[in-house]
Image 1 (tube, rainbow, N blue to C red):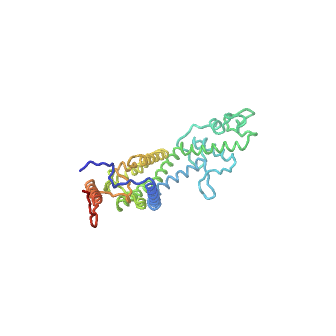
Image 2 (tube, rainbow, N blue to C red; image 1 turned 180 degrees about the vertical axis):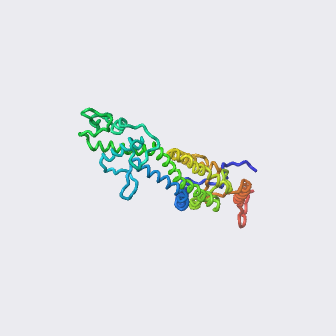
Image 3 (spheres, rainbow, N blue to C red; image 1 turned 60 degrees about the horizontal axis):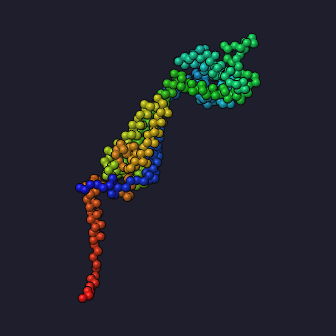
Length: 354
């Protein structure tokens, strides 16, 4: 057998980036549709009990914290942005000085299990920011007892303070308090993490099985590893050498996605932003490889050693032997066409001068 001259077989043509991207978008849309169908039809009901349990804990603790109220629809919601600053003040005072510390809790409510070292002095400094701003932006001052500043009491609003600045300051502190509640309160942090975990399971497992359907089952049934998107654009798969591949390579192509998808089960409870960073990085790396690698191989193509080819312009052989036979016949036919220059009819008479 002669030494191969081409990196790929003579009749193997790689898919162009445009059709390949179009096929990818179609497959991704189908993947999302399958995922959402599985979420609401199967996995959300499976994890509903756990989600409802932790949602009820979050709802209860939200009310206990004093940062939330029940609206007219009996829904737990934040205080209206149109409320007077005194409403936010009362909420902040209760949250930091009572709920967070476990002191003088309202009847029928429970404090955070993790006590905090907050007191009136801290509240005056960090919430009311007494003395921290320029005179023009000071909104509060120390309360007075007998005409003398009493730092043991919560500060009061300065008579000349602008209500615009007061509302902006206190409502900003209210938003900060909600973040403190979600991140620092043991009950809320744990319940929130558990709720996010079980809620995410519905999407993680749905995406996993949806991917199996779209990227393994469908190409397994159709010829040349075609997904619905590849079928529309007349694209298919071949080995990295340009020959027909076995269907087991479809499983290998799916491995990177499966690893990332199932890893989310461990990573989401830790940090959702870490998850998004990892997924985004992997997608960018895969796209960069498809654009820059000589054979236009994405990350999953490198794992499975496959190529995306244009089936309309390609002939995918079983192996080098079959290709050599085809090329020999093809080259022989070309030679025959070149040699076949016979003249039909009488040959011309040749005359020579003596």
